Every structure is written in structure tokens, then in C-alpha cells.
Image (tube, rainbow, N blue to C red; front, side, top):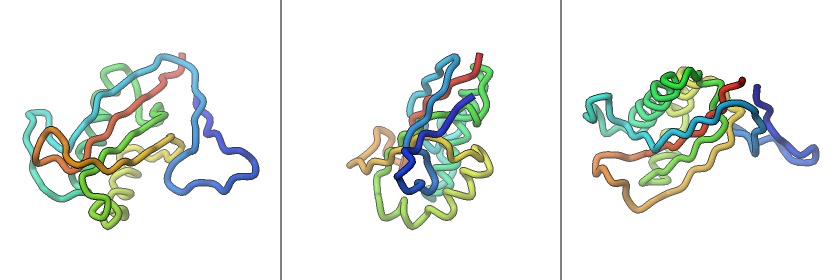
Length: 131
């Protein structure tokens, strides 16, 4: 079980949680990018790469017996802030389809580049699977 944290005098954030409290088995997932299980990119579209990275997170989490609702933190590394912002509607659609839950502490950071030249986004994840 997890609980989103929001100080009473703060405005509720849109699309993320300021903090999350949870108990259970912690799962740390390395940065996932928009390629498939065979390390192949199928698109250069930002939102599609983000959706694939999220799918990869869901797949790794399942190996620990976890589900998307167990995610407590996501850190997004994007190569182009403007491209990320322009794709937010489509990213949100894919996020809701795969994850569904916005009670996740999230950060997004623009970086100069990612190790894989074709990658436009990399997402690290932390989950807590209840005992």
C-alpha cells in the first residue's frame, strides 16, 4: 500500500505526487529507454519511445512480482524539453494505459544526450511491493 504525500496548504500537483510513503519490498529499476526486448528502436517519435520505456519498466517490475500500482518514483531524462512538452498529451495517454496511477513521485530532467544515440527519453523507476 502506498500513500501520496501532500502538505495541507499546498496546491495539488497535476500528473505526479510530491511524495509517496510505502512499505514492502523495494524494487529499483535501471533507466529504461524506448527500445524493445531485443534492443531495437522502432520509432523516433518521442511519445512512442516514452511508452516503450514505460512498458519496459512494467515488464521488469513484473519479474519481481510487482504491478504498475507499486511504482513510487520515476525519474525522466529527456534530450529535448520542448519535444517532451509538445508530446505530453500522447505521453499521458500511454502513461494512463500502462501505469494508470499518478500517485508517483516524479522528476523530469533535460540532459545533453543519452548513451544510446537514438534514445530521446530514459526513465528510472522505484517500486515498493507490499508485504
